[in-house]
Image (cartoon, rainbow, N blue to C red; front, side):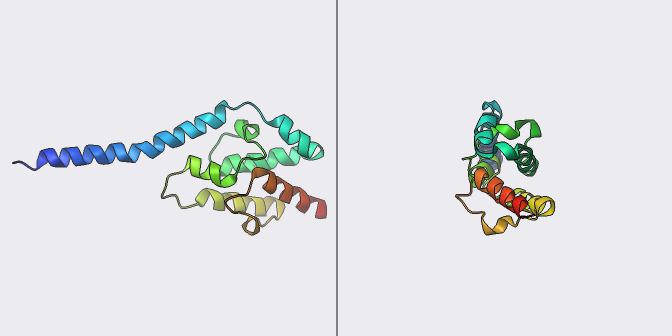
Length: 136
């Protein structure tokens, strides 16, 4: 019996298996883009700091490779870990989170490592930045 049919089937299964996470992550990204704006939710919590909120959400979008026009599609209660896991593969290297932390530190002097865990929300990050700005 020739070996090539087994190899062809194995390669086909490997290709399909590797595409499944990409399809799931694409759907997650589309879901975020299709959301309505959460601008009012952000304004309800940080009305006097909306330019700061906009800047933090812009940095978040840059780090997780979303276009900045979708920054207000993220809600205050969105968990950073959920967004990260929803947009990256299972073998991701957390570079997006490192980029986020480095940029927030460079722009605002905020050390994200002290608060970033599985339950950290975007509200938590914005509140940390607001508190840091109030100290200045």
